[in-house]
Amino acid sequence: PALMETVSERVEIEIAAAAPGVPLVRHALRGLLSGLDVADEVTADIALAVTEACTNAVVHAYPNGDGEGTIHITAAHVDGGLAVTVRDHGGGMAPRVDTPGLGVGLPVIAAIAQSVEIGTPEGGGTEVRMRFALSGPAE
Image 1 (cartoon, rainbow, N blue to C red):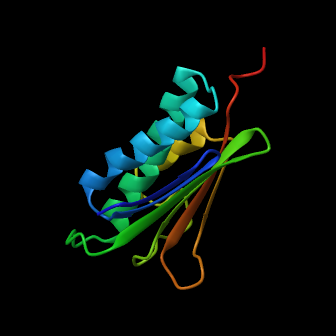
Image 2 (cartoon, rainbow, N blue to C red):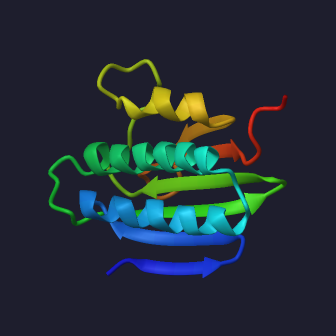
C-alpha cells in the first residue's frame, strides 16, 4: 500500500518501484497544486516532469523489475515555487545527462523545471531534485 501524508503545502509519498504507483504520485501532486491555485497547464507540466522522474527510477534503479524497491517522493511549496525530490534506493545512475540510454525523461524534466540536480544520496540510490515555478512565464 502506498504511504501518503498530505499537509496543505507539502506531500510525501512512498510507492513500490513499479508502474502502477506512478499515477498515485500524479494524483497527489495535482491535489497539492490545486490547493495552491496553480494554472492547469503548469500543473500538467509539473505532473509530467515528476512522472518522468518516477518512471526513470522504476526503469533504471530496479532493472530486474521485481517491484521490490521503493521510490520516495516529496513535494513542497517553497518560496513561491515547488521543490520536488524523487529518490530511489537502487543501483544508482551516473549523474551525466549525456549518457546514452539514461532516460528520455531527463530532457523533458530539464525543459520544464527551473533547475534539476541529480545526485547520489547517503545510503546509495539516486536522488533527482527539481524546482518548478508555479506562476506562468513572466510576461
